[in-house]
Image 1 (cartoon, rainbow, N blue to C red):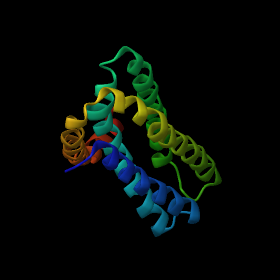
Image 2: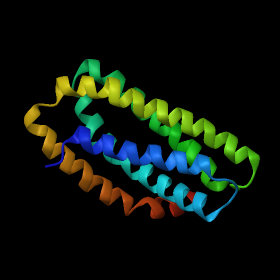
Image 3: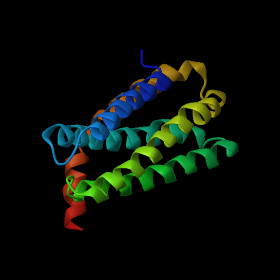
Length: 158
């Protein structure tokens, strides 16, 4: 079965490693571009699935609404930074500067999520639903992953 907390945390570990790989590379290298593209797709699909399956449960309680809204707002800010980075030249110094901001903000976000949001969610999500919610998260993430490129193209056309 797929525990929602384990699923989200496993994704976060992948994201941490990708961020480290990107930081350890330089310029517009093939390794950096591959890690960036993987990170971009992973985080986009992860965030959408997380909002729909996990945050929606927190919103069901008054005290969970602010926490979920805060996290969704952070997702939006991070998404905007990722979009800016995706359109920039990786070999330019300003790319690395903006990337470091994204890295800092994203690590803060996932640390806060694992520490604070998980604790709140454990008070809301019944034990019996944890595995089913994890499976729904994985399914939704896969669906969303298939849409990342289409959404990217749609944004360019706007």
